[in-house]
Amino acid sequence: MEKYCGQRPPSRPTINNHLKSQSSNILSQIKENVQGKDVYISLDETRDIKDRPMTAVLMGSLDGDNPTNPT
Image (cartoon, rainbow, N blue to C red; front, side):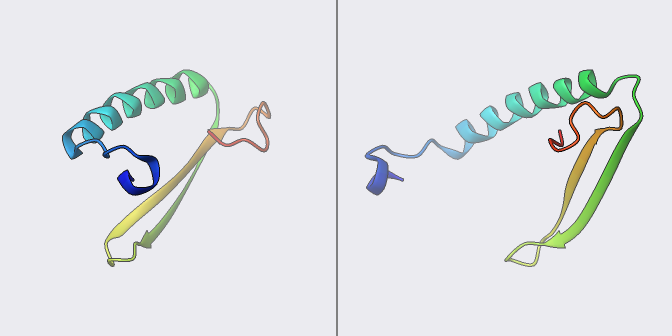
């Protein structure tokens, strides 16, 4: 990043703190958007390049508001 952007990348703790606050905001938005609605949830189990297991989650409401934009 420093080579191409001219800036040092943030430290790992800084990134972790930022991700924690952002994930809390996103989870709150998801709860607000689907509260009281029928929802779909799709899970896809896979492995990353280092063979670590991971799960991709796709979720949205079934009310037709966003038929092509999953949350």
